[in-house]
Length: 150
Image (cartoon, rainbow, N blue to C red; front, side, top):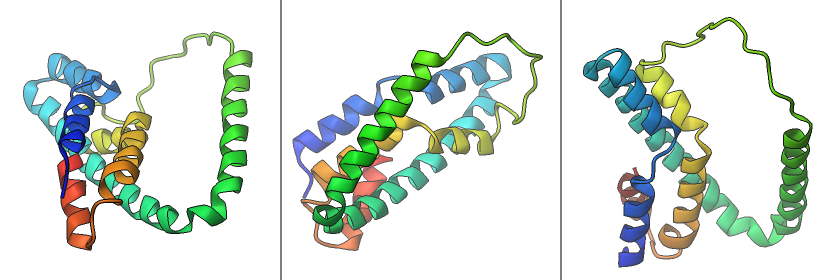
């Protein structure tokens, strides 16, 4: 069902550090290992949600891609131009008072941070479109793919 390429992709991507790895390390060092692990549990739940959303959305897109491909290319190009313009016009910001909106070591913060982690979203979409959806034939197989990715 799943190939060596799939497992090597999972392994290599899982061990490259991302923003949540650094936040987990900082939380464990600043607060305690227990609170760091709670944050990591939130990251895991966020990861499961991300992978499930990637599976559902890429399944829908996989079936309707010929119809929406030209629109997605235009939308993607416009978004890339917007990002380039934003980086170009951005100026260094003056540091403001240190206000914290969320508790940095909570389960909820770990989950939210994972939901907006671009690395994980790209990881999920790439894995689903390259390895999982072309090679599986049932919902159970997709669920196994989600759990393996998470």
